[in-house]
Image (cartoon, rainbow, N blue to C red; front, side, top):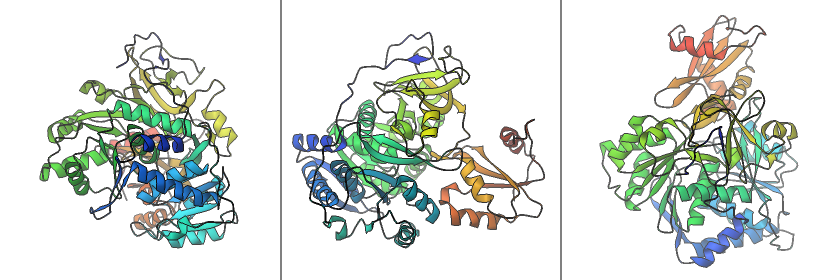
Length: 534
């Protein structure tokens, strides 16, 4: 814990850890040289069966082999999209792109055609690496159809085929990659309904992962179960790059299934697992029914939303592990604040911890951008080596999010106590966090407004004890609405998790004097039972 006694809501950068000027590829080489025979990666397939294993020496050798092949097909700085669930191939492509100086663009395997098309076009990608299908989503078919309409995309390759290692017409060249170069573009939806591509540097990703993993207590003896999606900074950044720098074993699970995860926690004598609250609840429920030996588990790390005291107590009682929450966002690679392992249950449940190393955090007035007094609510802002480089091809959004002094404005409201512990109190933006996943109303509203029977729509986050929030769609229409048709429309045009859970037809909306819908009134009236669901 940092010993602070603040008078304003500003924590200066803490120097308990250094900022390393190193790239992802150089980090892999450094660890592989130091620990060539140590187990680096263990695969657990979708059915729960054990798969392949790599030592750090083997991981580097395969990543360099792939990097050489990629260098003959793509120029340094070109963008390639990875569209796949968790797999060792995902990890190898992440490291190979870093070594070859390519920018890896991540895509959710649940994407439908127009979501994938948007990411390919907006990122300026020249290639798409994918798999045949995932959970019934025909990814090869969708990818081929979408890429055929984008001239810039030169290649669509199955990640599990020999074609991934094919050589092209360019000479083999392993470029000099700098820590400040772009390593990834990760898309985060915006309030306009159009996702923004956060361009993340090697420096930001490497250091953020190390700050996070070190605070989790990771060492070279750690076994870390990775169930977080690789298309998100949590999976490919925090855990993958955190394990790399600890020089420990990462057990990569392809698909979250609480029974499989618990079995692996026991079989691998795992020390650490990161999950969103809904994952942790599912694990606890399954553990309650069939107990596993989790005596090796030291830390359950949790992000995505605030946690209830009962959840922490259940982790302690059923898993015998410590509990640590964190707060962050993609634009910060992503962790901003995190608990220390010594923190008590009151801090764990009521705050999001202290800033990670080398990171300035301030609660700033939304009116004049000055740090507010201790305990006052303002916008949570962060500054340091982990702030994104920019939003891809969107200078206006970049300047609105990162100010002239380098402060990243998160759009989240919070307060800080005199010790520098931050509590998240709300959102400047109207983001909905359902099960740890961020959803933005405007994107869902825009989709629903494509239907001729939808005159107006307001998408609102509704409190829920299990998911944190549910997605509620309040719709004004001149004719009776059919829930099944609305649901089918959303499923056909967006990822499944963006589909509203609650549907309400209204005659009119509560409006401000300027004609804007007052969503908080809709939320309050729904909680009071004033509406009937479709």
